[in-house]
Amino acid sequence: MSEAPFKEPRLSLNRIYTGRGDTGETSLVGGQRASKDALRIECYGTVDELNSFTGVACVTAETYTALAPLVAILKRVQHELFNLGSVLATLPEDVKPMQPQITPIEVTQLEREIDSMNADLPPLRSFVLPGGTEVNAALHVCRTVCRRAERLCVTLARQDSAPEYAIKYLNRLSDAFFVWSRWASAQLGAGEVLWKPNEAASGRTGG
Image (cartoon, rainbow, N blue to C red; front, top):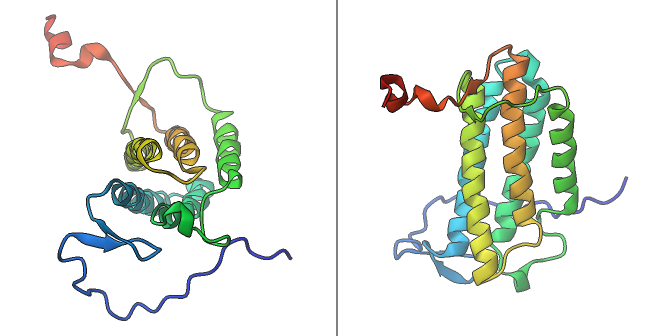
């Protein structure tokens, strides 16, 4: 068996609050202090937010036996998002060889899962709206938060530096959440909520 690519964490979190962040600063992995509203902190904070919403989607999906394959994927994605947060919280010069991060393997795996689950879905004849089932809506929340994380990483890459595969991974993951939302609805026999422009108030009253 080959050696694991990432170093396992060695933590001892006995005390939760230290007061060091009371002045509006936090520490990066390399020990540098940064303002809590700095772009890098906003990036990994949004990835953390996405991880939380992914957990909600996972727990919701766990109530349906038919969605077991998706549950397994979402649990893996939560670990990948934590790995992404770890490397985002580290300046490039401080990244260690065995530090958890995102690699081409994670991107390729998402592509396989997108293609596999999308293969049996009917082609879309309109844009879809979040809803129809709780799982579908939860996955769309994940999709939109993922897009926000991606936008922030694009800005970080332009203004400073971002991990090599961060943007590509988040781009694929957002597409995956979309496909997973459709796949989940199909597995549960729930119809998709299609966008109908004339369902707006002006459309219903004729202008």
